[in-house]
Length: 364
Image (cartoon, rainbow, N blue to C red):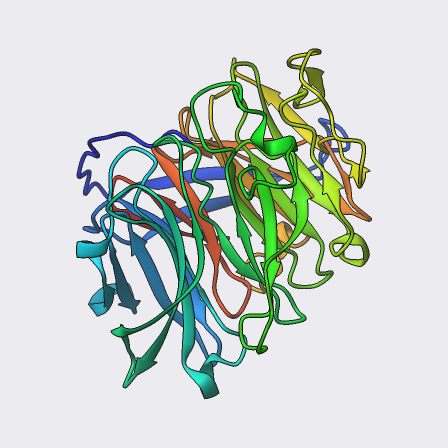
C-alpha cells in the first residue's frame, strides 16, 4: 500500500452513490447502494473491526498508534494508546487489530505495528472494563524491516482460532533480495499461529507476496481473499479455498506481477501450490489495491456474496459475485477518497475507511 506522509483532515459528510448488478450482462437490473458516512473526525484511520460478543461497537485503528471506540456514530473513547511505541508515516504505523474469537471470556486482542525503529511487531494485549491495557503486552512476532515500505500489517483470525499475519516483501522495489521466494525469510509471507496454545510457533502457509494490504476470510465459507499490491503495472486479488489454506501456497512474486512475468531472471521456488490471481487490474485504473470482504450481512440483500475491494490511489470501489472461488466481472461502484481499508462488524455488515478521517458503512 502507498500511504501519504501527510494526510489531510477532510470532514465533509460524503454520501457515495453506488450500484451493484449481477454482472452477467448489461441488461440486468441494478440496485442502488451507497457507502454512507458513519463517523468522521478521526486521524488517519487505517482499519476498523469489532469484538466478539459486541457486534456493533466499532474499533477504529489510527495510524499514529491509537484505537478509537465508536458507538452510535460517535467516538466515545480510546481503547488503546501505544503511540509512543510506534513509528508512523508513509506505510508505517499501527496497522491493524484483531480480537481473539474467545475475547468475551479471555479479553485478548492483537495488534500489528512498526516500532520506533521501523520493524514489525505483533503483540498480544488484554483489556479490562472495556479498554486495552498497554502494560499487558506479550510479543508474538518480531520481524526486522530492511526498508520503510511494504510492511503488510493485516491480522485476521480464521474459524479454527488461528491468527494470521500478512508480511510484505520488506520494501524497496522489485524485491531486490528475492525475500518473497525465500522460505528462510518471514518477509513476503502469510504466517499463522495458535496464539493461546503453549509452544505454538509461526508457520508459513503462503509466500511470494509483495505487500498483502488487507486479506479476509469469508465468514460463511472460510475462504481466503487477499489484495496484494503490485509493482508498476498490475494489482491483484488472490483466492485460497478454506480446505487448502493450511497447505503451502506460492503467490508468485517476484517472478510474476499479477498474471504477467515481472522478472524472468528471478528464481521461482518450486514448492507448494503455485497460485495465480482470480482478478487483476492495471495501473490505468489505480496503483495500490485495498483488499476487502465478501459481504455476508443482512442489511443489503443485493450485496450478499459479493467481494468488495478498491484502490487507494484512485479511490475506485469494485465488487464481484463469488461462487466456488470463481469471480464474475466486477462492477465499478464509485469512489472513496484515500481508501485505506475495509472491515466488517459482528453481524457481517461492511465498512470502508478513508485516511481523510471517515468511516463509511454499506447501506441499501
